[in-house]
Image (cartoon, rainbow, N blue to C red; front, top):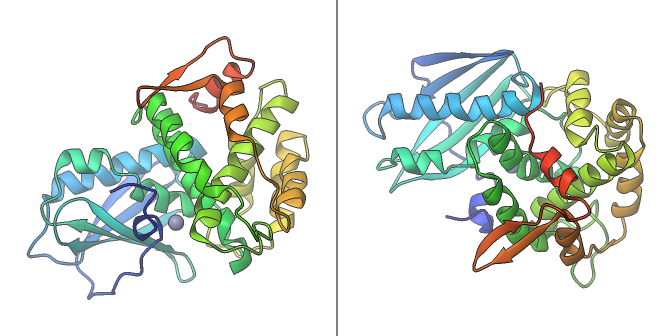
Length: 299
Ligand SMILES: [Zn+2]
């Protein structure tokens, strides 16, 4: 399973089932009520609960606390092994459904990114459909950085994933900008590219003191996924938090025009090189300090 496959990245709709007894997991800022939809089968419960807690810890690390006071997390049974799809709602209380295969192992869950992606959705207000790219892009971008900050993912894997994934987000022929081009690549990775560009530019303009993370924490303080919002006021909140209008400017540039990015030059400035299928960091590259700051754990 790779995040490049649309079937995995798209938050697949899962079928509702009858309620079962929930296990409550307390985390800083909130609680997760975990329900196993199929009581009779599936992977080891304790292993699944540990994975839920670990995933929540990554999100808490990034945002400073869990995004919502309470979320119901329904574990749906799946065939085979691994996590095969998830979806998050917040219109009648926050709820995540995620499908976990019967023969899922501890190492499958250790490598899973889907649950952190879904939990990240909780941390941003709900937008109109034309802005799905930002909701999905944020979850795609924040997920691996959050796991790295929490010590759950190596820095090499974070940047390797971005070097692999970001080209999917580049505009193709006929592109009309992020608000008007709703392909899989532009939605997930075009949105993630917007986040990366914003993060870099905020850091350039603040002497590398602040980044997208500070803007996103301020936006979450204004409302979680349980709140509906227009996009412009949220970007303004983020811009005010970091003192530079990067989010509004970048949105203006990318919303209805293709706005291509030279990714090769961007990786080079950050000091990211591919060697023999692995990522190697060049620590004296012009923006290596920015790259290091992005994955550094905050207070
Ligand atoms: Zn998603």
